[in-house]
Length: 102
Image 1 (tube, one colour):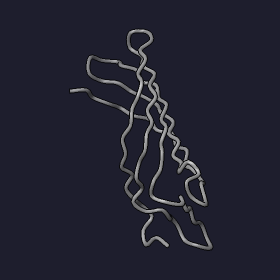
Image 2 (cartoon, rainbow, N blue to C red; image 1 turned 90 degrees about the vertical axis):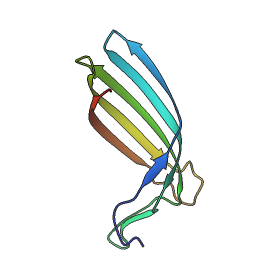
Image 3 (cartoon, rainbow, N blue to C red; image 1 turned 90 degrees about the horizontal axis):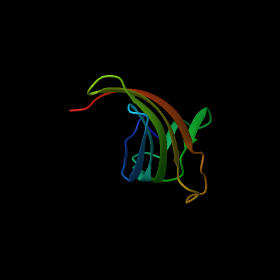
Image 4 (cartoon, helix red, strand yellow; image 1 turned 60 degrees about the vertical axis):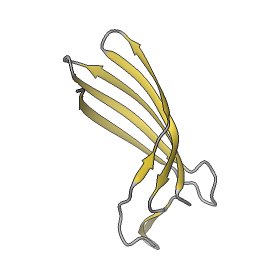
């Protein structure tokens, strides 16, 4: 059982970016990742067990550039262990971003 309810997700992969219209980008990213802790929550109450440390991610997003170096975006993330372990609960998340490009 985990003593804390946070962890680290490290990973890398490849992505594709498609620009349609001048200021709108659609992108897809994916690859392997490593999860520092595999259990979150309390056993018997609310426990999320990801099965193991090796995970895979896929991310689909849309980004809009509204000024020269500024953009806003939305992305959907799917995180899974790819059925490599006994359990594979997966995680799906949404995010909104504001970015500044140097």
